[in-house]
Image (cartoon, rainbow, N blue to C red; front, side, top):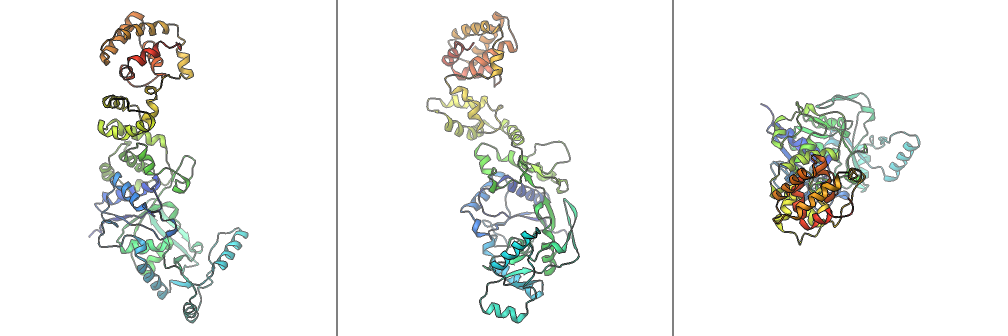
Amino acid sequence: MKVKTRTRYAPSPTGFMHVGNLRSAIFEYLLARHDQGDFILRIEDTDQTRKVEGAVDFIYDTCRLCGLDFDEGPRNPGAYGPYTQSERLAIYQKYAHELVEKGHAYYCFCTSDRLDKLRQQADENKVAFQYDGHCKNLSIAEVEEKIKAGIPYVIRQKMPTTGVSVYEDLVYGKISVENRILEDQILLKSDGYPTYNFANVIDDHLMGITHVARGNEYVMSTPKYNLLYEAFGWEKPVYVHLPMVNGADGKKLSKRNGDASFMDLYKEGYLPAAIVNYLAMLGWSPATNDEIFTLDELVEIFDPRRISKAPAVFDLKKLQWFNAHYIKKLPLEALLEITVPHLQAAYDLSQKEENWVKELVSLYQNHISYGKEIASETALFFQDETDWDQECQAFMEEETIPKTLAVFTQYLEQISDWTVENIKQAINDTKEQAGVKGKLLFMPIRIQVSGQMHGPELPNTIHLLGKETVLKRLKSSKN
């Protein structure tokens, strides 16, 4: 009988979720759902110094917006709770002491001063710091005496010093690590809190996690985890180490480096479905050349064996390409939700009718790649004058242009019913009378009234600008 696939997303509650962290959650979700398995949320808050108030809400809100629903977690507990590590301290303490009894861990009473001196020596010798095992061989009597005296201690894992540890990773294949480089890591700190490395193993086993997906920075640490599984006699999970997500500067994306979080992008008018689609393609590829997929489609086709070994690069321009695709398909009401707040923040809309705003947003639906971009793209509708760049200025030196603009101005002045259709007719009449067509017809008009060489439908743009504004710009001295 096949064991049901269970994956877990296990973030630390340290603030908003940056996109690299969210990408991990997406892969873990796809891995579970492709196998009709369970997707678990576990909050790893053993480092209380970095805990941010409200961060768990950010995690839930982000995953909800992205469609990543949890089968179990702090808010919908199942049979494996608690799902917050700070509520599981007694569990970790029990298993840490059990390891000591089995001879796979030991009490360490070394002071901070002693450890600092060891680190200093390592720096001076230009070698990586490793604890020297000073307390590993203390007798039972010595240990009991120190504990009785109230001397603070940690519990360290006892590592083998010879041989090689080997394991299989679904992405990187066979991984071999020499045991001599595995430090006797701390499992339980002096305050009774577990370390990340220890708590993960205990929780993953007790919660029935079958597949552990995490960043590839843990590739070399995994033998430490496997030694813990072996010490307890537990079955190891399937490992899926994910390639890093780097920024344009080549550095790993991180909240600490100020990289964009999901909420930063969301507030700027990026759509969750587009973000999920793009992040799923960072470090993974389908069997086809297609790039646009719904979450359900990604679940259907996801194959972890197609995850790349190479780092992925978060490219905002590429995300905008994805987002623009999704924006083009939005119903108008949904489009208004992600654009109007940005218009309101940038301009005074109090004198604009609701239908005018709707028409403006609709006009730019195919010309923006995220919601906030509407503000910069539509600046020409809220300015008294327009500025021309050098390309526009050079084009407007064409000798036929003054006549074209003069003829068009005359036809516009004659319009009594300011409609898009009548504006189209004025453009057609200009074409006939001025004897111009193509870009020599449309481009001069567009540049003169908008200050741009390209943009949405010209008649609609002119209609929204209003007759008074358009005529004023047509008669300005720039031409």
